[in-house]
Length: 240
Image (cartoon, rainbow, N blue to C red; front, side):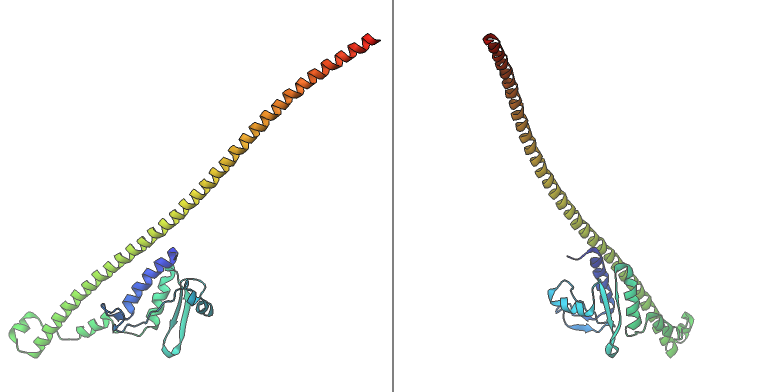
């Protein structure tokens, strides 16, 4: 029963929750294996049990967002359509607990001493050479991890676009179905009207036939009356 706007929002909302929210055990589905930066929750507006709560929260324009931060309580609330989804991502980045980003990790790695191949060959047992090798290995792993993350991001974006297109198609199918139902209803009404018009036309033709018969009778009566009057005139003349 969701509209297209809410369907598209739901896809992006769940993707955001998978990125910033808690990670759950794949088997149980309820046990948190990794705590996220944000705890996501949702309330179904069309559930009768939530009707009173939605009124108290004044959540009348959907989808509607509330952001809370620990003891500070409510930080923000706003109506968020898919076109305004950046408001939600910006708010999450603003109020969520900070984490160390990849750029900061890279800056720390850049501080490590780096030796060239000659240095490694001349002093293979040197501590700095070991650090350099570890740094090179770490940088290589970071590069691979970065490429993997890019691939995952691209794949997620493709999945999101697919889900949005799927939601659009489902909405269009529902809309077309409603149009077809409306057309069938109108067609049935027109057919019923056609039947009524046909019946009225038949009745009018019958009435026309009756009127024509009555006119013929009137003409016959008029002719007979005129003959009778002439005969009466002749009889009066003879008596005179």
